[in-house]
Length: 437
Image: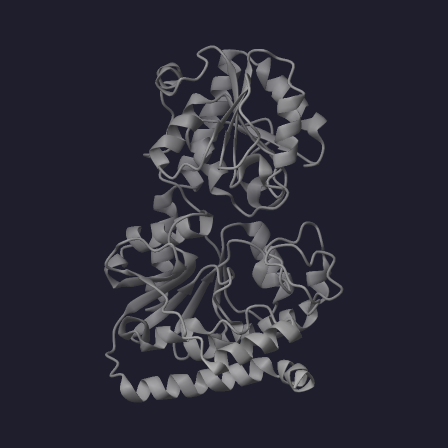
């Protein structure tokens, strides 16, 4: 029996594709589909994380909002056009597919619940399907062709997961350029136990050739990588992420510090990331080192994002903050933001901070180089593992006159208002929708 399952696992994608075809055929016989100009949006969540924020901002802010329906795997909040994807019942077939996936190492291929979208009349009558993150243990690539058949597909990439066999970030690895295989980072999210990266990437490539989506990248950096990975794709656009410049804005620093209980005359360094200093991808270990080795009594570290090292005299940790206004106040109350990230595309936290007039010291990777101009509106550090380089930038800014700091703050705000506002982002997506409706 085990041998039969092992053999079957090698043809798992074919089995699921055939099942998807039958499922689609059966549903269409029962469901009367009305023609319409609906837009269906799919993402892992509707709240929590940068991808969810961008997707939700588009759904709620687009000129096509009344025509949009947002389908998510979890974390859906009450709204007339946000829906949880109905889970498939744990039938014998589903359990069999899961076992084949486990044996064959086919990441997420047994997760076929999104096929239930075919039973939704709004989805069925949508002309456009706008994909965001499909990773997050809820979506099988083997159902994608059946799901989007006869629809225009727009796919916004928030990380590198589409380019690789499994990793959401490459961490400097170039194996994806040659089709993956011999993966050195099997534990990187989303982790796999068996190295099937070559097969997984080859399968993704075959699906992309078939559905020919319009790929949207928030940064030119990621767009260039997509062109290398998939030269056959016909349309690759760059639409930068945007933030609400009316929420994230400069405010009275002194008044905010009094309100928030922060040291009025202290030099405040801010760091924000999910899991805060426990986040290895965002340089959490370096932040801990900087806190532990800090010798300036007037320097305080504010860390945001949940689990973190304990509070101390010069370390002021915050938990998760979901309210944008509260985040904006902490940005505006600080002197400098630290972001020693090791994997990023076009992070919202950097855009938000700079929109509040807060200069950022960040690793020079990904799309961050398209936001920060070194020694103009912030600082770019070549080596994200070198804490001494971050210390040098911090010390340089500490010695700036008030006029110099003000100039950096003005330039940071100007950059976001000119190029990374939510209005600019929505305008470009609306153009894209109009061209496809």
